[in-house]
Image 1 (spheres, rainbow, N blue to C red):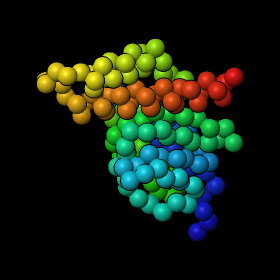
Image 2 (cartoon, one colour):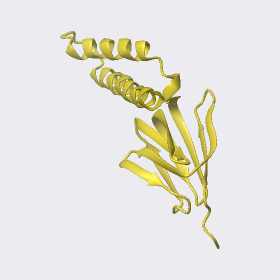
Image 3 (spheres, rainbow, N blue to C red):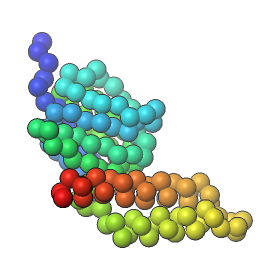
Length: 141
């Protein structure tokens, strides 16, 4: 059996379908670290962490911010079910910067009733969104 030449990538969140594309390569933030997927990859099911997902089509990369969920990999198809996902060009950088600032303030707070883990997660997600957005802005310039 011949290996496929491309992958079909489907990425969805509970709110909407984000990506349904034929791609050449994908890098996914798994719970145990980032991993790449090429056509013909061994089947696997992995848990996602918060991170940057990218895929390439003809040498051009598209970046997304994703957080939590699962990725199912097959020889010619990758399905990503993410709790949160945003394409780099959809990220509102002002909103992400404000969220990062609020999270930093909560972390630095001396108040006892602050949910420190939640504040750290908010800072991680907003920082990630800003980093992914920067990559998009660089590729457009």
